Length: 505
Image (spheres, rainbow, N blue to C red):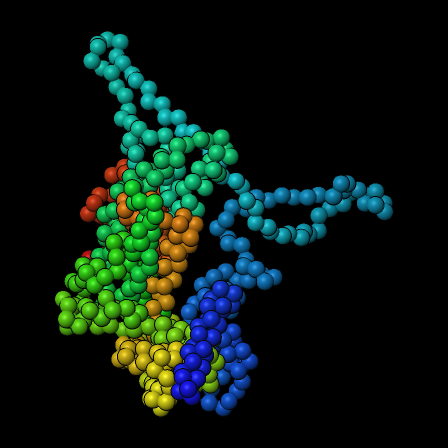
């Protein structure tokens, strides 16, 4: 009976912890910041902590907490208005320029000026293209007429700029197509609901070769990031959606000022099994930074990537497991490990934008000792924990992936986590939340192509509409040939009005 009581008590404790975790997911804070998880404990100076505040493993903190790098200066708590925006000057004079004392004429001695951002609503207009025909009065063979301009969709009622606007709103800013139709209806333009989907598939066809070039560029890098997320697809004949996957491949050497430009490509696949990972990454050679999903491990365990691919794992994923364990059952051991991981991120924040050699030097001098403390804590505490506890599971996960988690201590070019690709996944998650699902397999493929190009343009600091409108126009008109597509990649792109310099070999 005593053994049964102890067993029931342990089961009740586990169920209470699970209930607490579910309640926190439904009603608690989503942030993983140390101040949210540990409360005031995260602010205490215990003598063995670094003085730099520990930052969260994920990058979803408030924008005010992050330094503004390369941005306009702040003014009265707001960003200063960019200088390139058109200024419309409005001068407000007094009602009278007669002196109130002597009735003499007032003269201007100075001024006070202020600026405010103004919004001019989009103008919907119709471009009427007229092509006169000319004939010779002396003969019957001299009829001349200018050729019709090429359109992205021959015979359609929309221009390239309209298609670019709809694609940008849908795949960059997550405004569903049916909502765009409602916006156009407010301007008196009524379109059939099936038209925009067909238009999006057509422009995805136009830029598919550029999408392939972007994927080839990412796979040419020696270090990339990979992740996957679900994508519901509606199939004909089914009353419910089928869950497929968007795999994301990304690169970015910006944190250490390296050569690789920020880029992300989404690949639509029917699942997230080993076969999909083999198909996408079997020919890749280099370092892939991923979470602990088994499909990636199969690449190096006995698959075609063995000996060619090295896996670096994500410290943020390990941290989240300790966060979940602490939230369900607060433990000083979990709190101590979270504090140590916070020290790792504090060091990374300090050396960010340094060279790879500078980052490696700081990691060997400081981070290596912190990671050793984390492993020592786990080795000491794990044997005394219940194997079924969440804290023990978090510790076992960390130990099982330790080699990949500490690979950044050997190479200053490797990051500590996969936040680079996870930030790219937010665009997909927002679009999925707005649209609920893709209408078909073709629609999901269109989504992958357009979101990849537009998100990469955003990562490069470009306005996605301006970039896509120019790229579409130049591809459709033939101004850029198929073997010249590299000049349209976001980091090489220049507006058509500017001369495009030839790429270096």
